[in-house]
Length: 109
Image 1 (cartoon, rainbow, N blue to C red):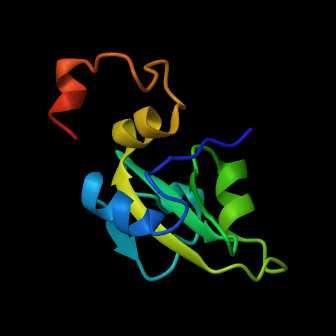
Image 2: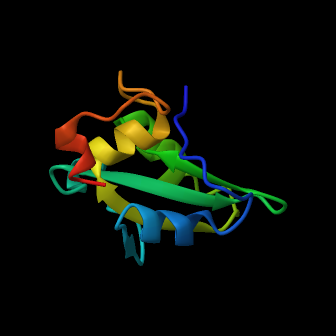
């Protein structure tokens, strides 16, 4: 199952993530899942035409799905953000959006 970061619109998700989560855009994805820097999460924004999807590559399988499928021509952008922030923003972690954030996480956002 995938985990995605929702933004206020259907488009411009990469710009929102870069701004709202202090992301760093990469020109291409890391070569391997293990090459994602420690403490960082990789977000892949896929342009689906009428909307974009911002997927959190939380494991090697998701990483392969979003970075190594050469048969999928959809444009992609690759963004690194703090992993804990990625886990929270995508709903991957036990802390769900809408609940109060712990103090340690508030400092990272």
